[in-house]
Length: 282
Image: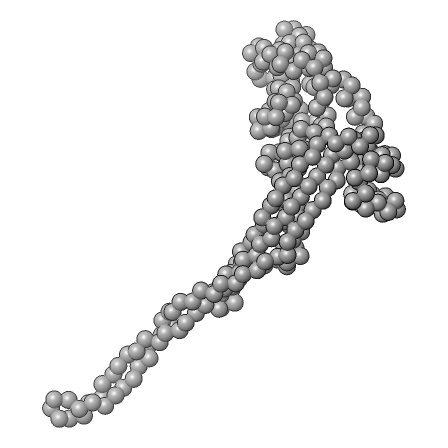
């Protein structure tokens, strides 16, 4: 979000997002290596060629997948073996005596654990002058557990090592970028308006004017006054959702958006979907 919401709305009309495949193709054509982004000239030229205002890039390192296998064994009874043995009794006669012996079997279960360490560094750089807008790094330890019994039954994660590596790379990147995405990347929100006349509509209008001027706190006070006048109408809750998202209260913003979307499907259903992804990523 920007303090000047009206200016942001105008800028958003010119905003373009390139698909990853198209971006990769452009970089391949330019023959740009990741290490070259330390050069401000390369950053500026890449931003110009891609038509981007800022570039997010970084470096990822990881260890080899480490695998440990621990076999656990136990003994179980699988049946009973009967045996008849001739024995001489006290009376001096031979008798057939039945004996029962438990049949025991050793069974095993393998516990297979995999782990690897991932280190990710990332920077958000303004394309025009290579100024670093944000940078961070994180370390991630990924692990998985699989089990196989003697019977052949399997449980847990039996993905290939390559699939395991890719999953842990994504999780490491997600951990690094999750705090950044809600704060740095711009999400444009429309403020609800009330076409009617009266005190409720006046407070909505007052709140919208305050927000568009960058006075979010003042706008919130106006929306709350509108709610106190008519809590059944959706416009005030819609704009409170925008305000709460701006303040970083994504859980409450999601509740507001979902409630409003039942009466005004668009664009609030889309807003709820976007904020839900942020909530689930935490």
